[in-house]
Structure formats: structure tokens, C-alpha cells
Amino acid sequence: MWSGITVEVNALLLPAIVGLFLMVVPVPFIGRFAARAVMLLNRKLIYLGDSYSFSPMQLIVGVVGLLFVQSWYSWRSKYSSVDFPRPKAEFMGQWEEFHAAKWRSERNIYLHAVTFVSYVALLRIAQLLLQVDELQVEKEQRKPSAPSASRGSPLTAAAADADKKSK
Image (cartoon, rainbow, N blue to C red):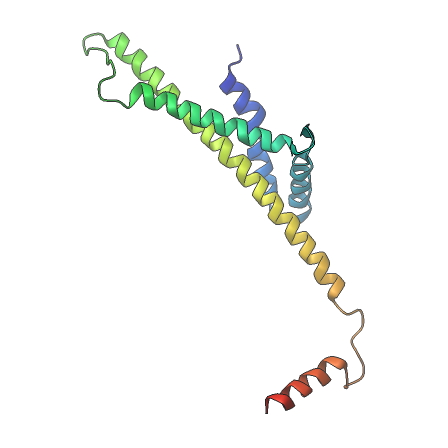
């Protein structure tokens, strides 16, 4: 039987971790490919009227963030108050059930938090890798194709004029 947390771990958390791993592998082609795949998923595909649209990645981050807040609030309301009903020490079965439920809630909080942080990091690293690629292309376009053979290039003349004005 598949529970919601099983689906989240297998369908959301594992792809995010694999994507993060592919982005930090020191092979540039693999990192760029993973970044482009993530940014492809980050395109605006879901439109709500004329004024608002969002991407599947934003939807995943929002839903997982809400699940995290809901599970944290649920855990906090059940287990962190002073006057919540605790089983008596002589009923060991009830004590084990109580702690199993508490630890299961804590596990769900940690899984939601890790999934949320993984997707936020995945989006940010993908954006940074694509910005680095754009900057490298701009740098290559600015690079002069052949060095100037003349000594009186406009750059050196401008520098000489600036020196004369400062004196």
C-alpha cells in the first residue's frame, strides 16, 4: 500500500537528490544538461487567468512547503504541549505505540523539510549554472578576435589622455 509519504519520497525527493548530484558532478556537460532540464521544468506552464501563471517546480515547492508546515503544526499540537496524554509506564504496548506515532510524525517533518530544501536548492543551483554559461558566452563574444598590430590603439590613446588630464 502506497502512502503519501512514500509517493513524496519516491516521486519527489529522489529525483531532486539525483538532480542535485548531477549538478555538482565535476563534468561540465552533465551539470549544464541537468540545469537545463530543471529550467525546462521551471517554465510557466499552468495559467490561471491572464494575470498569474506558475511552473510545475513552483507548484511542487509550494505543496511540499505546505505539507511541511502542516506536519510540523500537527506534531507540535499533539506532542509538544505539557498536558498531552501520555501512556502509563506499566502499559508498555501503549508506550511503544505512542513513541512510534511520535517518531513517525517527526520523520514526516524531516522528509518534508529535506524535500523542500532540495527543490529550492535545485532551482537556485540551476539558475546559477545557467547564469555562468551566459557570462562565459558574453566573455567569449567580447574577446577580440585578433590582437591589434598597431601601438596607437584607441584604448592606449584614451589611457594616455586620462593620464595627461590627471596631471
